[in-house]
Length: 385
Image (cartoon, rainbow, N blue to C red; front, side, top):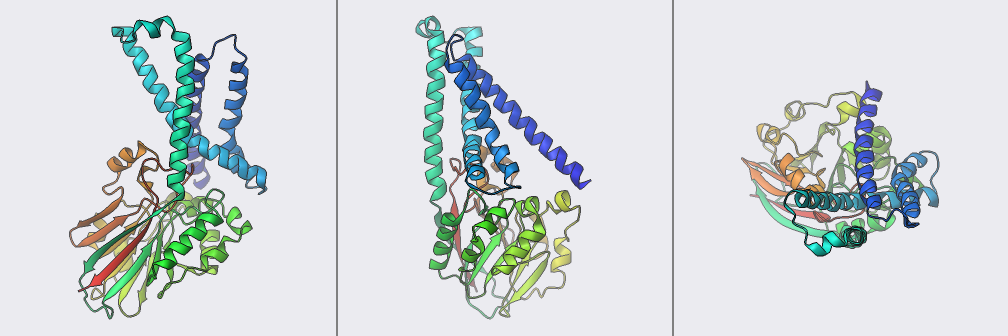
C-alpha cells in the first residue's frame, strides 16, 4: 500500500509536469518560424532543461557531485520558469481567443503576426528571467518578523519566554551551508530562550546534508532551553527515521507525538506530521491523547507542521500553535491558492484562547525563488501574566 500510494502520487506529479511542459513547449515552438534553425536549438534545449530536475534528483540517490548538483539547480529554477512561461502563454492564448471572436488586435499586429509571436516569446523569456532573479534575491535574504503575545501565567515559574522559530528550512542540495550559516547567525543573535522548528528542516534525501557536514552547523545553535523540532512531510518523504536520528545526533530534540516539560514552567508538544499515514502507513496520536495527561496549570506550546484543523488546538487547551508548510504560496500567484486552502496561510491569528502563527518559512522547496511571499525567521516574545 505504501508503494502504491507513492506511485500514485508520483504519477500525478509527473502528469502535471509533462502536461505543462508540453503546453509551453508547443506554444514556444509555434512562435519560431518553421524555416529557422532556432527551432532545432529550441527543441534540444527545452527537452534537456525539462529533464534536469528529475534527472538530478534520481542521480542524487546514486552519487553526489558537481554534476548532480548542477542538474538540480538548473531544474529547480526551471520549475519557477515554467510557471511564469505558462501564465504568459495562457494569457496570450486567451487574447488570441478573444481576437478570434471580437477582433481586439490592431491591424499592425495582424499584419505582422509572425514577428509579433517571436518577439512575444522573447519578451516572455526576458520578463520571466527578471522575475526569477528578483525572486532568488528575495529567497536568499530572509527577514526577522518580531511580535509579542501574552499568555495566562498559570503556574509558570518564568515571566517571559524569548522564542526563535523557523519552519521549512529544507536543507539539502539547494539550501546548503551558506544559508544554514545565515540561519544560525540570525537565530543566535536574538539570544533566544528556546529555538523551535516545526517541520521540514530537511528537504528530502539527507545525503547532501551528510556529505557537507551540515550537522556541525546545526550544533552551533544556542538557546537556554535548547532546540526542539517536530517532523514535517519532507522528513517523511526523505526517510523519517534517518532524518530524526541525524537531528538528534546534532543537538536537536525531535518531539514525536509527545510533550516535554521545561523548567517547571511550560510544555512543548510536538506532533508527527499528518503525512505519516501516506509514507509510513501509521496513524499519529490524537492531540487529546497527547495532552490528556498534561497539567493544565502550565502553558502549552504546540509544534504542528501543517496548519489544518485548527480547532483541535482550541479544544485541547493549546495556548500557542506554531506551524509552517504553506510557504504562503512561495511563488506568485500561488499565495492566493494557499490562502483559499488554509484558514491561516501565513501570519498571526488568535482564535478563541489559542494563538496561532504560521510561518512562510526560512527557505523553501524546489526553486530557490520567492515572488509570492518572503522568507523569514520568527521571533516571538511570550509574556506570562
